[in-house]
Image (cartoon, rainbow, N blue to C red; front, side):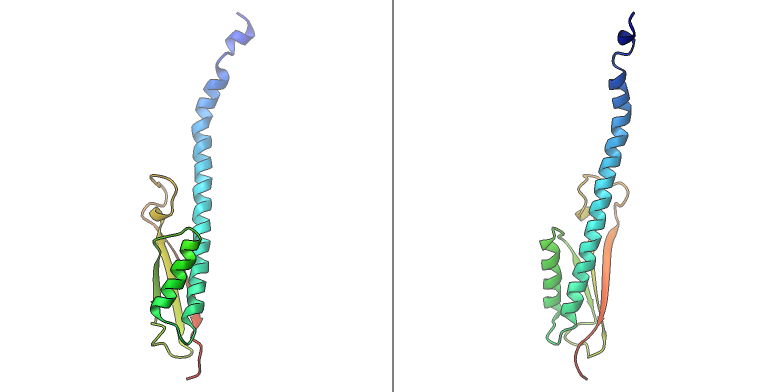
Length: 133
């Protein structure tokens, strides 16, 4: 029996052993990158909302509309926006807080997320209300 006949199929066996690990690592890297990207979108959206909330003519629906529009433009839907206090009743100098969150299950590309299932990604920005009181 020649040496070539003894090694036939070794590459296929090695690939069969390594391929699942390689693809799990690849999918994990993609999923982690997606999570970081969505976290950055939420941070920017909360900043956009806070900038809108501190203006003199700001309304609750206007801030929510700005945040939702920004997020959907970046491909992140089903966000929950929380604004405290209400922009229409806040006084000049009050801290306006805008929190944007999305369940991880709404942004994952995997059919069954294992590591972050049930988690929520959240970002908050705080700015002072404009005006003279």
